[in-house]
Figure (tube, rainbow, N blue to C red):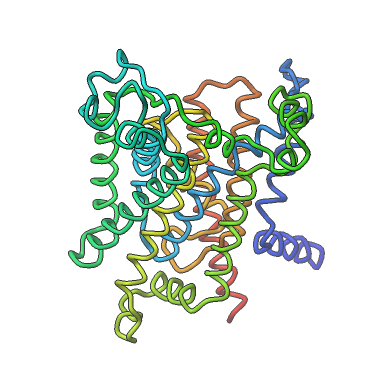
Length: 381
């Protein structure tokens, strides 16, 4: 009986641990690396190049998942992050593009007025602009903030459901991005911008030879721009949640919005700022994704990326009911989802099975969230 209680005690400790998802990720990845050869599949999981690619996949997803974590904590949801990524990607590309193909963009409503064969908006209107990358990035971030502001205002001022508001925003801006570009990708982005998606900071100081070796995959990147940007955003997000009054206000609103409002908290302002932060994070992710693939893409945030974003936050311990979550947990949740996708792809499963497994993982994560909440309530008693 004592041994049984000891086992249950260790299981309880494991479930309540902040690093439960990290342990789960390690066990999953090591187990897959052992099992794959026995299934007759090539074991590429442990290759340094594969691991480096997985970390490359983590950083943009982490950026947008941080914003979603904030929204979930206040008891909301932001379905528009994918559309925000798409519209910011193409608008940024249309500002920065150095050349544009007439046969590709002649059906765009902007062709001949704001964009032409000479390039994007900055080059067409001003002839040349040395700060095109900086201006393009600022425009992308401002659009993300604006979309978040519109979401927040509609939810707080007009008392509309977050699900419905962000669903409408998703539909509108996804369609708007396709209309602006006639459903085409915006190529011809400046090299300085593309470097943000793959560049290694160390190579800047050690010379172009090292940078070319990284580009040819002869050596692995050490400290990349996406890693620094996303981890910096994660540090800021965790600091806001754990060390500021704003973070405590968010938790209070997510736990009991009516009580927070009655007690005098500026609930409307907090909600608007949280949705603006979510839009900002989606724009950061758009910058990293667009720079990585080398062009602006109207469907950038499409597909099942929203499933990955919400799933990563939930598996990291953020409650779908609000009032609980951390950026640290989201970092681990994103890592889990990226490595899970890597394992499933290595098993050569169909995309339908992969999506089904991901959906099942989110369901299990929601169940674990309820279980952890009950265990914590029992301990507090």
